[in-house]
Length: 403
Image (cartoon, rainbow, N blue to C red; front, side, top):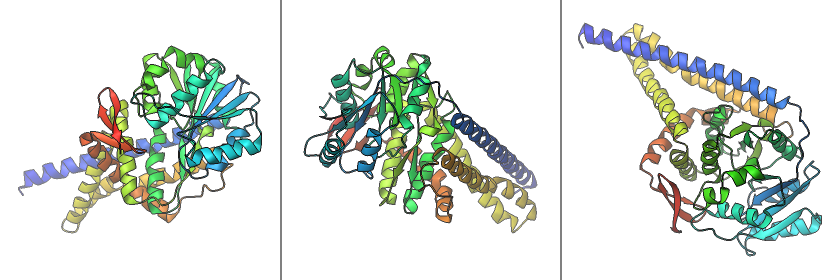
């Protein structure tokens, strides 16, 4: 290598190292701002908006903690609501369990119904449409929650209160995976990384596992048309809300907990690739953001390793090696800070623990899992979800066949 080429290579890598450090420091600053916004949200006083709410809970199979979750929803600290539990059929294990809980509780505010398939919509979206058609005209607000979402008694009151502002299209929580096992820890870290964007109006979206909307908002955006052929309830909803210039408000106190176990590397990659493919189809801005961020991180990390090896021959390479590799430990600090933030948002959940060595190790491979899923999503034309195969198109996802 000529001296000129060597100087150019060194200068380029040194510049990338400086950019990597600046990007990491910026990420830390964003993390500090995120933590501050979480604390502000947690300290927000409710205005007392308590319209009649219909809580829609689609169920299928015997989800983790399903009995606990249904019982909690039936006992919300909210004066004016009713619950619609929707299952695929009376043969579904979720139907038997939900029926037993509703019957035993003798709550007049609970109803168990069977879903009907809507054109090319996914099973979950069909369940939501079935409930809306059955209930239409009674509620002022609709709240949607996943069957594997564990919440506390104040969840509904917190979620509904900001909807007093008619410019707010939706309020939303987020999901925290309470992990058991290494690959569950990876799933938790993978999912939590997306929370960084939830306060950003450009990138956020109403997450379908914990969201609420006014009935007149759903009418205005023509939700039946939006969901008629959709596999993703929340990402299609996000597109419609943005079309009508509605805002989405993130409420960290409405974060739900999902308990995971028996997660393997194979089903984690399948799940994460499906999620990434849906984001590429419905929310390309987030996908483009992730593509640029993770390619930059991984390229600089690889160059850092190369520079570190060169440093054993020529010590001046140690400076760019240090700069290029520094984002990794800084990222671990950010991951640990994020866990602490979720702990503050979930004070009622004793199962959320401080970052362990296993969790820290899991967060190290998240950028590589992300990169893998991003590139897989480019070539993914079909996804399998809950026993059905969907074709991905520019106009959305469409059912192909039952698997």
